[in-house]
Image (cartoon, rainbow, N blue to C red; front, side, top):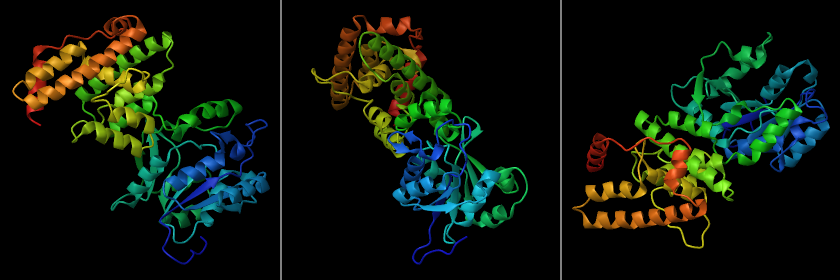
Length: 401
């Protein structure tokens, strides 16, 4: 490890391994491949910086001058590995040897896994900094480990002394670790071949939008109970059915965004102002498009000249689903009116929200040229009506707040 510079000690550093041959990429060279307007290396540097890491080491090897020039442009340090042709672990050792002595945590990643999100790195480092945490953490999505592993600097001497086979994985095998679930499928998205690169080029511009699978992962992380999952999936099914039908009628809605936002609309249920809390949670994860939809799902005013967007579709779908059952929009609001009949202020607010919902419903049905319920039923979502005890449980829950 090199000496640290004067001043406050660095808390976290990153090592990006960019010295490989890119032998399976055809004419492409991984560190300099374009992804969403930047190089793969530039995207990773930006990710680490947004996660709060100021000291980033880039290990060069093959085509070292080109990678070093990109590192200079990005204002990060480049370290040359003369043994790069012997395998990736030689680059790991070169990079870790260049980590400043004041660094307490280190994240390591190859440049060919460039799309994981800043929130993923921040989550790993936050856990690593907690009292009693193990010295090593891995991100996990859908039961699979991905990149970047992050380790306490106390492990660096042992890793640097490792000479056995198996690379970094084997060097870290003796140490206690923890697998951290993250709602980020991109920890698994690597690019070894031109076909892989084509996939990542599609994924890169959409990092701010969770996939439905990532939405399900976040629901699990947030420990949403079974009844909440059933409602979320019901709303997602209705929203997807309406979105696809509207697209067939000429709209251009983002179905994946609709489905993910619908799954996540109640992710913060139980917290005060849960719609705003859900929006803040998603914004903190970098899912800004979904955050705006979730934050607006309780009420939505649509001007006559405003276009229908993904927001209105998720909002309306939520009004069609009571628990896990399909109900008419008017019936959903009537249940609320009955519950709060003795509270004039509450009934006035509910009546206003009902008018907003019916206005959005009318716009959707005009665009569809058919009743929304018929479209939903044709898509296969027909559970309902809810049993009387479901309404009773809802009344008890509302009164208990």
